[in-house]
Length: 137
Length: 187
Image (cartoon, rainbow over all chains, first blue to last red; front, side, top):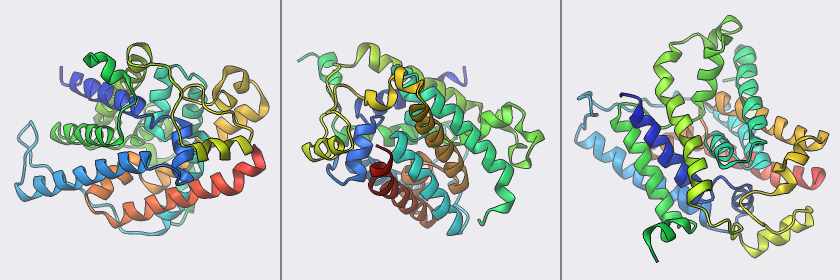
C-alpha cells in the first residue's frame, strides 16, 4: 500500500509532538515568554539537522524512493503576505497553544474541544480563499 | 528502566528535534514535503470549496498522502495518551507558572489547562469564542503566509528561505502581541 507509509510517518509525528509536549499550551506560553529553551531547542535542532540534510541532498543530487530527483521549490519572494499572514497565525498559535499539526494530535490525545479549533481553522482557510484577491501579497 | 518506561518520560528537546527532522526527511524521500497546514486547503477543496473560489480548484487528490499523514498524527496522539504517557503535569518553568497565575491559570496538572480545554469551558460563550477565534486566525493566517510551523519554520528555514524567516518573525510578532497585550485583557 502506497499510503500506509504516510500513515506510519504521521503516527511517529503525532508521538513525537505529544511526547515532547510541543502540543501543550503551557509549552507554547513558556516559549512566547522566553522562559525556557525547550521549544527553541526542538525547533532549533530540527532546523539545524534539516539544513544539513537539505544541503547533502542538493550536493549529492539525491533521489527519492521512486528514483525521482529531489527538488526543493523556493518560496515566492514577497514580504507582505509572510509578515501579515505570519502575524495572524501567531495570534492564533499563542491563543490556542497549537499550530495545525498539534491541533489534530491533541484531538487524538483526547482533548476533544480542539475539534472546534480545527473546524474553525478550516473556516479560516476557506475565508482566506474567498478574500485572497483583495489582500496585499 | 525498561525501554517502554524510558520513552514514557517526556522527551528531551534534542531527541524531539531529531525525530521531527527524521519525519521531514522520510516525507522528502517518499517524494513529498513536510507542511501540515496545506491539509486545511485540501479538505476545503474536497468539500467543494472550489465552487466558491479558484483557490480551491486544484488537484486535491494528489494531496491525499498528507491527509493520511494527518490521520496518522491523530493516531499518534491517541497511542501516546493510551500507552506512552505517565500523566505527569508538564514541567514548565516556575516563572511561567507565576506569570500564568496572574492571568488566573492554575499550575499545570496535566498536559493542557482545563481553564481552556475542558468540555465545560467549551459550552461557555467565552470558552467557545477563544477556541473559535483561535482556529479562524490559525486557518486564515497559515494560508495567507503560505505555511505554518512545519512548512515555514522547519522546512523553509532548513532550506534557507528568506520568506520563511519573515513568516517566522511574523509568527513571533503575533504570538508576543497575543501573550503580552491581549492575554491580560481576556484572562
